[in-house]
Image (cartoon, rainbow, N blue to C red):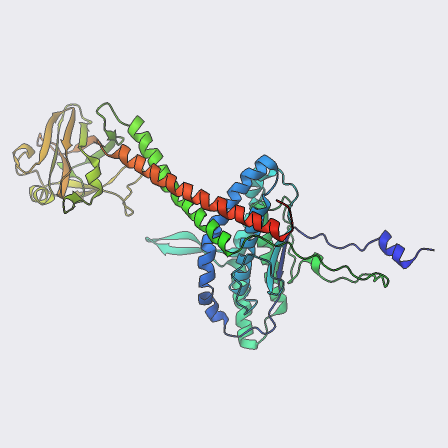
Length: 494
C-alpha cells in the first residue's frame, strides 16, 4: 500500500519557476501620510553614495564582460558587489519615487536584509554563455528597453529657441503611479493595494531587465507583469503536509565580503580609473597630432574654409588675449606662431590679409560694407560654413595698405600667408579686396606651431598613467580583500 509519505516523495508539488532576479517589496502598514514630501531630501545622502557606486558598478560590469568571454563565469566577488549595488538602488527607489512603500530609512549596505520591506536577490549562475554576452545587453534587450523606457522615463515637448524640442525626463509611468498612490494615501489614509501591486510589478520588470543587461543571468526576462510584493514562486501555496517529517531549516545566506572598506576603495578606484581616461585620450591624441598631423612647415593646420561676402572686407570676431603677470593665462599662449593663409577663389583678383587691434579695425571699417564671421546661435557654425553678419556701407576710405593700423599684413594675388605671434591685446583678423572692388570670396586656413604640444601630451599621459595605476591598485586591493573575507566567512580554504 502506498503511504502518504511515499506519495509526497513520488510527486512533489509543482509551482511557478522563479526568475533568477527576485524582487520583494512589502507595503509598510504604518505608512505616514506626509513623510513622502521630505523623502526627496532625506534620500540625498543615498543618491550621492549611489552615484559613486554606479561608477564602480559600470567598471565591474566591463570586467565581468571580459571574464565571461574568457571563462564563461561571472567572478563571484564582483557578482556579489553588482547585486549589492542593484539591491541598494532598489531599496532607495522603494523608499522614494518608485513606490513610496515604506517610511523605514534604507540601510547603507550592500548586504541582503530580510527585515527590511524591500530586498533583491539574484541567483548565482554556474555558467554564462560567451556568445550571449556579446548581444544580450544591446540587441536582444531592445524590446525590453522600449518597455522600460516607458516605465521609468517621461518624454516631453518643450519650447526652446522658438521651436519645440523633444526631451526625456525621469519619472515615467512608475513614478506617476507611485505619486498617485501616495497622494491617495495622504488624503484617505489608505494606499490602494491593487495600485501598489501593479507598481511593484512594473518595478520588478525593470529590475529583471537590469539584471539581464548587466550580465547577471542568461535567462531572458519574461514579457509578463508579475504583480504583488512577492515573486510568484515565493508566494505561499497549499501543499500536502507530511506529519512524520519536520520542515528543514532554511540555509543561512552566504555572507558577502563587501564591507564598508572594500566598497569605498572600489568606488574611489573606479573614479580614479574613470578620471584617467581624459588625460590618456588627450595625451595620445596630442602625440599622434604632433607626430603625423603637421604640414611641411611644421604647423598644425585646419582644413580650408570658404568665406564670402558681398562687401569689401571680412573680419573675425575679436580675439581678447589677456596677460596676468609674466605669463599669459590664455589658450592662445600655447599656439606659438600662428599662420593665416588666404587664397582668392577668383584667380584674377588679389587678396589682403592683416591683423590689427580691434579698435583700429572698427574705426577703419566704420561705414564700410563688410561682414563679420560668427557662428550660429550655438557658436558652432552651420553645415554650409560659418555665418557672416553683414554691415551695410560703402568703400573703405583708403586702401588697406595705406591704413597704417596693421601689426602684420600681406597682400597680392594667389595664396597669401601672414605669420603672427599672439600677444596680449584685443585683436581682429581682416581679409579685404585691395583692388577697391566689392565682393570677397576666399578660402582660409589657420595653422599654429604649438611648440609645447609634445610636452603637454607626455604630461597628460603621465598624469593619466598615475591615476590609472592608483585606481587599478585600489580596485585590485578592494576585490582581493572582499574575496578573502568572503572565503573566511563561508569557511572555504584559501
